[in-house]
Every structure is written in C-alpha cells, then in structure tokens.
Length: 96
Image (cartoon, rainbow, N blue to C red; front, side, top):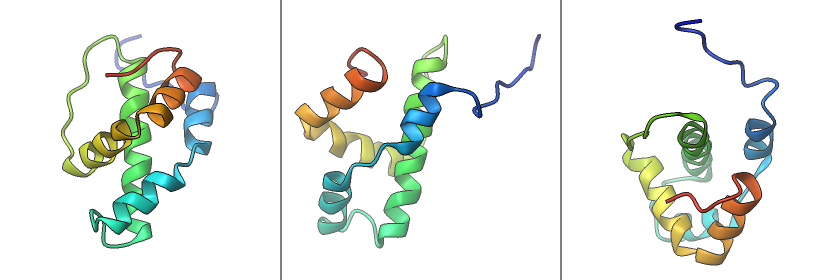
C-alpha cells in the first residue's frame, strides 16, 4: 500500500532501541561540551536511535542530515567495543 507508514508500537527493534542508554557516551559528550545540557544530549540521543532505526529498516541508504545526530554517532563509534556490541545486539551486524 503506497504511502503506508508502519507503526513503531509493535516493532521489537524500536522497543529495544528506545530502552537503550549509553551513560559513558553522555558523560563524554557533556564533558567535551558537545551539548549544553543533559536534556540536550538526551534529545540528540533519541534522534540518533531514530536514525539508526531508519538505516536498518530502510531498503535505501539513509543520508545523515543532522549535525547533532552525527556528533553522537561519531563519538559512539570511537567507543569501538561498545558500539560493536550495540550493533551486534540490536542489528546482528556492524552498522557503518
């Protein structure tokens, strides 16, 4: 059905992503003053989770359009072991 948007309510991946937290990432980004407050970081982290969800669920490549989401993602990737474990746990593969 063209134009149909799937509901996230019953999507197990979205539920798992929504529950995921990365306090080590928050600490690092706040320490580096990449975000002015914890609330600002949390908003960006939610958008990051939405972005990776779209990357995994989309049949096409999803471009990065947000500097704040990109900042979260690039810092997360620097925590290589944690990012690899996150990807394996949530997607079953490393998301580049």
